Length: 338
Image (cartoon, rainbow, N blue to C red; front, side, top):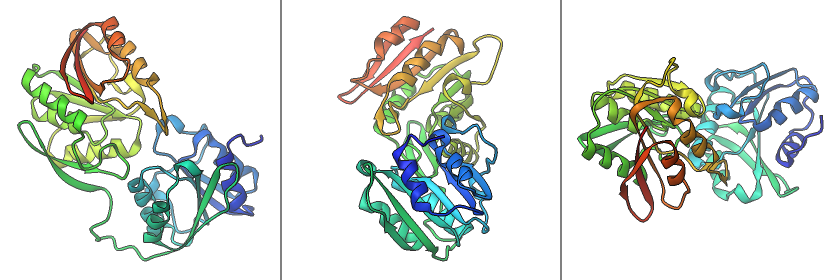
């Protein structure tokens, strides 16, 4: 099957002869890298991806820490977040120091800082020539990794929230990392003033889990979900560090809410993203809003914070009685009673 993505084509061309190679594929959108490597004669193709929506319908899935020293080649799409690239690069250097890394992206999404991040963990880093507005970085010869170094992942940070501090655990590239972003802060302030009665609550698109952690500390029975494996791990580890109980699922949209015969949630909270990769995309959040009646019980509440220019208010009013609870120049907090 011909490859349709110019980045995948360039990565595979730059990788060279794959016959007999043990290949690990990282963040493979549309499975073009994995299928291309197999077609080129790789002896073994294994894969891992952060976004559950990008999981290829292929065998060979492993956890990122399961990559081993026998790996010959890593084919990857360069993440835009430098912290994500740093965690990937460090993990690969520690577990497969003899591997070659061939990682690519569209040129408009690449920066020279990516080279510097790779050079922290690999001695030899070079860039390919550009083609079809795409480019590849090669990395070889791993540097020794100190497992006790302070720059290891995940990392911890303390943030101030209404009612007391919380410790966030964050993997590379998880939204907001070790800080409390302004939108989530505004939502927490609004929730603290309203003090919704403790009940079944769900943090959808949990990231580091700060909303779910705060609700659990406030007496709610909390579940959480995210499409990102790193976000799910961050939320689980954050619950453990803060000594609260949160049931966390890897899932897209309302599929992450614990299943029940009828809508059961008393409260759903979310700071939903409006990007899909590099592109702005409100579709997932509009779909979430339409599906709120399937998971929030009649009389239950959905609290969302979103960038004020986004077109969510009519959709929210279509599913329930919606009030603007807080607003500033950048963000709007709404409460919708189903």
